[in-house]
Image 1: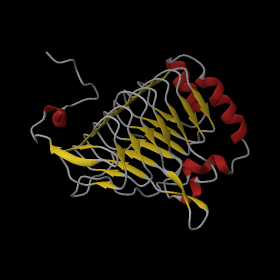
Image 2: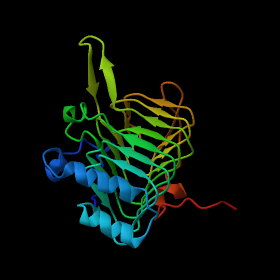
Image 3: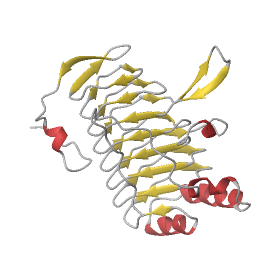
Length: 254
């Protein structure tokens, strides 16, 4: 089973994704779930080997034979889909996710914290899910709150360090916590130390500058967005080579 890419609208922004099936929530009612969660936690602490991947497949996850998961904390993660040649690096924490999905050739680096609040996941159709398309990367030392659902398109890079994605907030009028999913289009770069607020949508072929705070829709393609809140500050050439790269890697320049 290979994960599907995030789709793009005419504005180049990923739309809200439907619930795919009830299989991702099967752990919620399965009496064997606590045992399987414990076994997955223990397996996660092992180094990346074909045997580890095979064991995780036996525990119900869709892990491609040529993908890998290094030493990580995997606690109460209900379903994982790793496409061909995808990779999860060392020392990440994944907690209380309903679904974690990496497309072909995608990478999650090291020291990231990706989690969801179990009591908030039912408030969104895709609550508790992180879905990453093909040949995309979340590098290192980022924080992702997937309570409301986060979708990252193909050929994206959440680059540098210390960016934060938040999908839940407090509604002051109702004095209640609410969630809104975050959608990132295709061929997007999110630079270091960015803040992405609940409900944010970033158009394809965009660059979010270092330190920017994304609130609402960044809906124009081929733009550089900077500031607090982020606003378009200039155009990106449509023939930029990043928008034509074939895999996850951004190679050193001359």
